[in-house]
Image 1: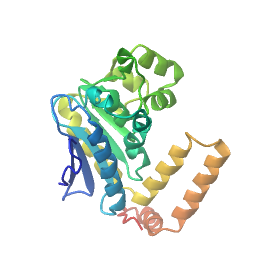
Image 2: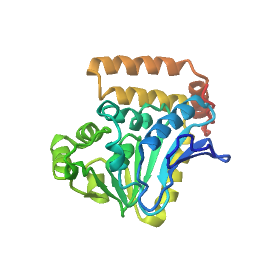
Image 3: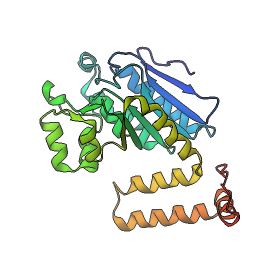
Image 4: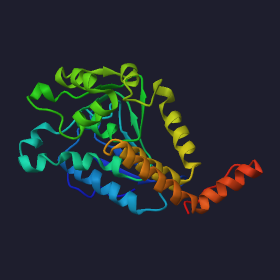
Length: 261
């Protein structure tokens, strides 16, 4: 367990001993309000995770019945407009991470909590989950990626419907919009998350990292540029030991064991 290295942070970071997995936990139930120091700690934790070759997947979860009701609203009044204009940089840490990141969601997933989830690669939610960007009620807009990620994933119309009206979206509707990967009963949430983790760990970490890079580029680059990047990643992976291992295991009709080389 790493120490909370930012005063006021509610984030706990644990490196598991039985799997190459980092678990980040919002630890201020019942609502896990995300403070400004927590945002800084969040980004720092991902920088540390990125530097560790022994970590191959990340889970973001919370204590209690709610993932997060959002940010520390009074704290925003103490921050400068310049600082607030860069809030999305910290929340985008899961998106920048080369390793797969899974959000385990339950209950309120509002504001920055929702934006953190949207920056992850997978969002596994209990059917109790409610998702919202309620900033309009404060005379504000989402400021940590919400306007951009909802629009890209769910479409402009749905983004406007959700954000302009500060509307709460139930888990089933969020899944239909593409905002959630999977929705399960609360008692199946943990087993579903760990099943996904173990599935991802069975693949080459190099292949996953390059796939993430190529897929994320589709948001920001023209098709031809994206195809060139995909081709470069494909060519690079052709030279790796993991690819040789995968081909040999295919020939031998065996399950491959990848080592990230």
